[in-house]
Image (cartoon, rainbow, N blue to C red; front, side, top):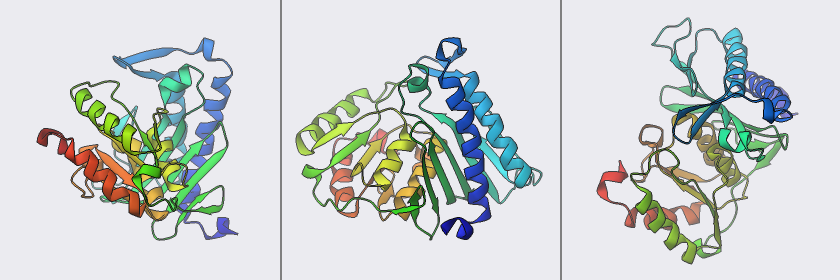
Length: 275
């Protein structure tokens, strides 16, 4: 069984994600009672986000008290190892909060473990479908214990592409629309469900053939990016480099779809956006 071969940190991350999933599922039955706060326009946080994050951190810190934490709601905190901790958990307790508060079942828990700038473990858990995506660096990517690979599609014109449109900052909306228009004419279709961690997991398991988005946070990308690379796909920032966690800009895809997708995106970018 793969369970016995999992790295201990991955097992703990799975335990934490499932604990958060239980909190989210319970709350989804009583959305009318949910207290929602706007962090900024179109960017919401609920008591469920906070409770799920607290549960995740409790599980992780109990097992690995010296590791650092970078979490969406509580920010960056040091473990017992201080600010120089070798390892850091990167956490999004509820990716797709806007979907959640509207009762749209497209959201997930995302947990990654980084050693320095390298992501070593990844969990994306969809509590609606009970789909658990996991990856360990060098050991492949899995969906509910089944090995997953990116799709075999080789042509952009045959590809289904995921994306996410700006919802907080609209500085680059015209660039987004120009890329979207071009891809609408050169792909089989585009989707924008609203939870980047799941979008990236869908690239890893072949449901999408590529993905692009600007302005993401590390907790949106970290786990999903490792899933894709371990499933045989490619991930980069807008320059084709590996600095997406720093820039917040990401393009991903199958080995054959990635290059034409990246080039199309690059050709529409003003230099100020590339980052």
